[in-house]
Image (spheres, helix red, strand yellow):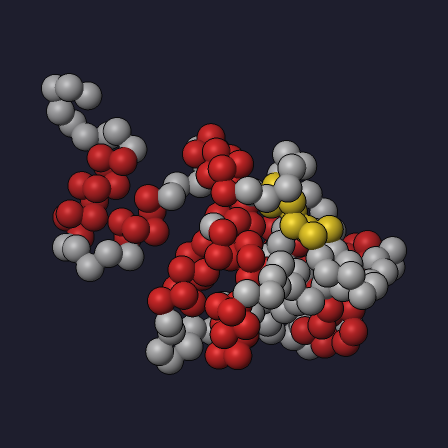
Length: 192
């Protein structure tokens, strides 16, 4: 979790500089030969987004659709029909504010997506960017720390930390199913 947080805060660390020399923040497009660091950060981003919100200043490290920055929930969840018309799901706030939201959408919008577009454009009228870096906080308002993040993750039953490890493993499907049932305490045994 720390790696994803430090990467999005653009801390001046050697590994962060190396990462940005070799990769972009577009995690939707998997590189041909991803490094171990890219894989770690990619796995940590989803849980980090689920427990955090961003105070946007310059928007260069905040994902427009995927981060909770304008509303308490990510815009992809609040405006799913409009999000389905996005040509770049991992577009940054700075890109949208500079080029406009319409530049990241497909040409023909459905009626529902048009209504959502009008709603989101009215919200964006009040957004102003500046030169300060974005700040990320945990959902209960505290600054990021590994201890607080992992306690939030373990207390939230909607996020399953084992799912990625179980379903992405190279084990046979019957072993994956057994592991899934074991983690959810759903095995048909006498002890259960």
